[in-house]
Each structure stands twice: as C-alpha cells, then as structure tokens.
Image (cartoon, rainbow, N blue to C red):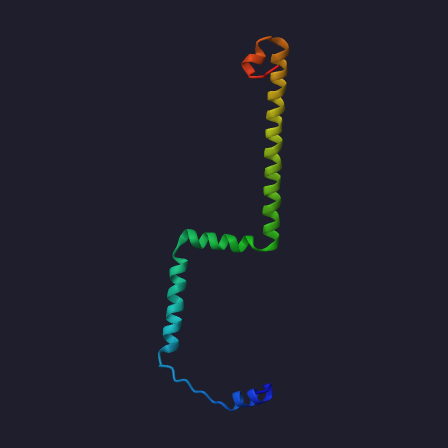
Amino acid sequence: MNDEALHDRLRSAHLTIDFPQDFSREIWGRIEAADLAASSHGLASWWTNWLGWLARPVPAVVVAVLMGAAGCGLAVLKGQRQVSHLAESAYLKSVSPFAAAHLGVKR
C-alpha cells in the first residue's frame, strides 16, 4: 500500500472513544497529588532546585571558576608547605650529622 492510500484510509477512519465523565478530573487529581508529594520532600526539592539553577550557563561557569580557583589555592598552599618542609630538612641536615637518621634520609 502506498502512502497516499494509507493517508486516505486514515482520514476516512473515524474513531470515537468514550471516556468516563470524571476521567479528566481523576487525571488532574493524580497529577496534583504527585506534585504535592514531590514538593513535600524538603531536601529533594532543594537539591532539584539547586541543580536546576546550576544547569544554566552563567551559574555553571561561575561555579566552575570558583572551584578552579579553590583548587589552585589549595595546590599553592600544599606546595608552600612542601617547600617549607624541604627547607627545614636541608637546614637540619647541614647543622646536625644525625638529622639524616631522624628524617629517614638515606645517604
């Protein structure tokens, strides 16, 4: 059967469905009950709203930049701490002949 014949048959078919009178009211009642149940969960609702806000481009970029800056800041702090520890170890090795044994450094 070609497309035109199918379209003609579909156009000529008249299907009538009789729904109960309160069908629409029941459907909307279920939808309202589901919305009410979903909104009653405080943490889930907050989480969903926050993710919806974060899904927009500007907040997503701002959060990504802030996370990157925080990561860089933590890396700098860790690097400074490591440099300080290395400087202290070098000083102790130069002053005390036993420092290598205490620091666990092999010669």
